[in-house]
Amino acid sequence: MGLWVILRPGPYICSEIDLGGLPSWLLQDSGMRLRTTYKGFTEAVDLYFDHLMARVVPLQYKHGGPIIAVQVENEYGSYNKDPAYMPYIKKALEDRGIVELLLTSDNKDGLQKGVLDGALATINLQSQHELQLLTNFLVSVQRVQPRMVMEYWTGWFDSWGGPHNILDSSEVLKTVSAILDAGSSINLYMFHGGTNFGFINGAMHFHEYKSDVTSYDYDAVLTEAGDYTAKYFKLRDFFGSLSGVPLPPQPSLLPKIAYEPVRPNLYLSLWDALQHMEEPVSSEKPVNMENLPVNDGNGQSFGYTLYETTIASSGVLSGLVRDRGQVFVNTVSVGFLDYERKKIVIPLVQGYTRLRILVENRGRVNYGDNIDDQRKGLIGNIYLNDAPLKKFRIYSLDMRKSFFQRFSVDKWSPIPEAPTFPAFFLGALSISLSPFDTFMKLEGWEKGVVFINGQNLGRYWNIGPQETLYLPGAWLDQGINQVIVFEERMAGPAIQFTETPHLGRSQYLD
Image (cartoon, rainbow, N blue to C red; front, side, top):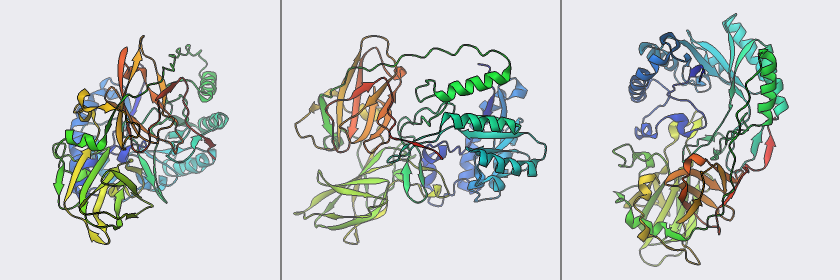
């Protein structure tokens, strides 16, 4: 394609994805210290680099490939928990054959602590004010070395319950122009943001926990679906004026289709589905998601975990739940436990009664100093009237493709007038011609996950801001397409499709 590559091999990359791209099985070690020279972490990094660099090294520019530079970790100056860590990562890359220019990348909070001997420091920013401050610092430490804005943030990501963040296109053009006037190279983050398909979204947890929405549109230069924006046209004209060479015609866009609504006609409650799943884990105490003895010892990474035990009295239920736990007495929902609600009242029960807690991993923190504390599920004991509950049956509900293969057609039933939730709803999208991109709208539904032909499209939640899910045409087949919705609390009459995305109430970034 004629594109040069600046490679960010990690192991931590941030990018608003779960745990910054680190695998959750690392957290099985109770003493794990991520992004440090802790032995348990470096052993995993060494193994990862052994495999990855064997593929990367031949693709470097000096070997005739497109890779012209390699970034050492990402924004470590903002984390900075181990002064030996960045030199270790740099040496690990060089020892495995990396010979191209090495870079670091830091924002205003970490630039001073992120500088690494033998690597070119670059900066991440959004405003012209930041540009002046950070450029002055780079000049003071690097003198006449090249300057680069590794990440110019063309927009921003969104969190559930917040607004859809946007950055004015005129502001983007002014800042890009100022960056080039300052003699700096530039990388647009994001040029195209894309989508947090499945459960891969990350989260932030400073004053409060906030998980990222499924869309990673980012208000970027291209939309989530790859369409042009005002930013695209302004930047195209601007860069074209600098090159002095006519730019090639821009590619034509593929159409978007508003398909006919899908009305689910079959249903399977979670409680009925349990009998068709793998045997639950039996444990005297709750076990967090990552430490469950499933997936060949790798634990559970994503999705939901269901904890069941037996109680014989009412009272106050309390415990540490990460991230959101819906509590059931038998099959009746009695409330939620989460970061804000650490206690709920269990109503009067008669005799031995099944207590169930359905815990969702909403996304592990990808940026911040608390990434070691990202285990999900029930964390430690759960208490009823201050007494720890015992003898749990634990179901791993990762909702991968193999998960749904257990639900053959004969397991489903017609949708009753009053469905029992949580539940799976099954419908079919019929496409007579070649499929194209579309946007799915779940008006009347509350919170859950959508699966298309067995693939996890992502989460929806009526608290917004995101109102539609981007569904690529490449996910669809000509003919019948299976649509499954896992809904936690309230189902709408249909699943609608539209030609245009609705990402929610907009808020301009300062």
